[in-house]
Image 1 (cartoon, rainbow, N blue to C red):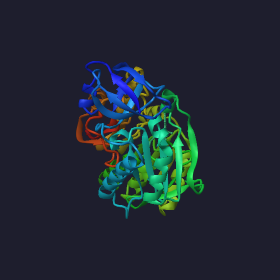
Image 2 (image 1 turned 90 degrees about the vertical axis):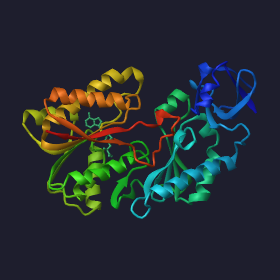
Image 3 (image 1 turned 45 degrees about the vertical axis):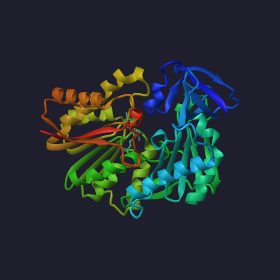
Amino acid sequence: MGTATLKKGKEKILQSKHPWIFSGAIDKIDDVKQNGETVIIKSFDGAELALGAVSVHSQIAVRVWSFNSDEKIDKIFFENRIKTAIALREKIIDQNSTNVYRLINSENDLLPGLIVDVYNKYLVCQFLSAGAVFWKKEIVGILSELLKPKCIFERSDSESLVKEKLEKNVGVLLGEEPPKLIEVKENNLKFFVNIKSGHKTGFYIDQRDNRKLLREFVKDKSVLNCFCYTGGFSLYAKSAEASHLTNIDSSSEALTLIAKNFELNNYSIDNVENIEGDVFKLLRKFRDENRKFDVIILDPPKFAESVSQVTKAARGYKDINLLAMKLLNRGGFLFTFSCSGHISQELFRKIVDDAAIDSGRIVKIIRQLTQSSDHPVLSSFPEGLYLKGFICEIY
Ligand code: SAH
């Protein structure tokens, strides 16, 4: 087995159980033949500390598989990790009402670089690190044995692969070719999902718990869903008897799917307005028209893809939050989110606070929100928490 020897003092990274070792912490890597293979991680003086996967082309040179250097990294190792992840979902997901959820959440399920999402009888996987790619065949075999899916579909098309210098791959890994749209249910609401080319692995699964919460706030209310995608929040609002719904997205494909999702649930589209356009512009238009809403959802895409984009992203978040606060009726509610990993919880809170001051409204934060529980955050891996949100009451 190859070896990664750390620089003096860098063994602290492993003591803190953070699963990433950056190339700057490594003195030398020996006897590695293939990208992604397992290496033993040693301290500068030769003590064996942990086992990890080497990423030859990445700044994250090693991702830890196990903090126990006596463990064997083999098919059984992956089977055990995957079984542990499945057991957690069996506890937290009511499979009678929900058949779309995240089964394996990468580092946070101690499987760096591996994402597996369940879409009814289909599994969608992302292999995002050299180590995950190295063990792909075994992982697919285990998932197939344990879950017997109709199909295991690969969606390794995330931009993070470019940094890792790994190939993008999209296609069937096992089983039958999936149809263009798959039907799933989330809290008994039905959705069509395009797992082949929809965003992420097809659906924003991470918002499930927050969408459910929305139901408590919308009965007989007018709701504006900004960045609505295929209507996740909109269907929940409709199910909880919102009186009027306005959906905005820049993607016509997403809006077409909203209409299909309403039909799928036998919901009428009376009092539902779908607008294709730019949220930044439309919020200004609504302000100029003096339009008001009772509930507004702001769930934009990631504005900060890197640290260098944080300042610009913060301006964007503040802009839409400020505008939304102005558009809300007294006693209205704002559901506001940021999924940018580079925007911390504290910074997002500050952005919302600043928007509140500039809006001239009184804003009460009544709840802090985060990603759904099937997207756990490993305590030693703060990067795992990326979705932040607030419910604010506006006066
Ligand atoms: N809330 C959604 C997920 C939102 S994803 C859910 O629960 O499923 C972000 C969405 O914002 C995408 O659908 C994307 O098409 C859209 N989008 C990105 N920039 C936009 C803009 N400037 N104006 C309107 N929509 C935008």
